[in-house]
Length: 195
Ligand SMILES: [Zn+2]
Ligand SMILES: [Zn+2]
Image 1 (spheres, helix red, strand yellow):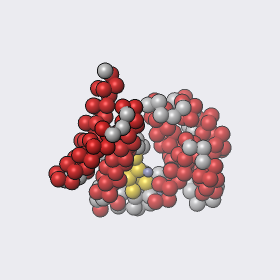
Image 2 (image 1 turned 90 degrees about the vertical axis):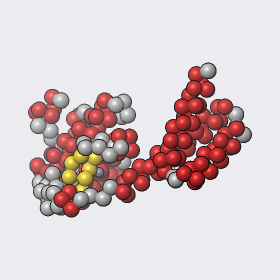
Image 3 (image 1 turned 135 degrees about the vertical axis):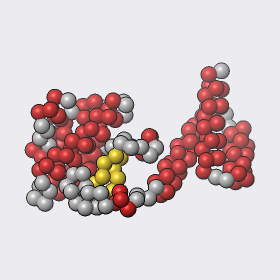
């Protein structure tokens, strides 16, 4: 019984996504094709198929939304929040895939933006490649200690948020871990240490 409800909920989620992404007759044709192919599968297979296609269309929607929202002129000329460079991009502290377009953003210039993502990948995805590049940039002398400190602070805030959601392990948001990955460039203030 529960499984049937589950399947019905998934199916209506999938149909809603298809209708959001395709116009009337095309959406109808796609939905009909799904109905037909689902009846040809066992119930437990149907669950997997529905999950797969829900993910697929969510990704499509995310890609569409990203394309659609072009930054305004005013946004592009607002200075980088980390280093002050006079042009910037929007960086989401909460990921767009899960939360959709949201206001939890900071403006970062192209360089700081890249560095922010390298740091994140090193801290959350254990990317040694990203860690090495981030350290190379951080130690180049081209970036001020204040800028680095801000970037690491924001990165830690994102990870703390994701840990609170249960998406990443708690320890990844701790300063002990961040210092282990980035060494002396990751020296938090005492206030951050206590957090
Ligand atoms: Zn910058
Ligand atoms: Zn970003």
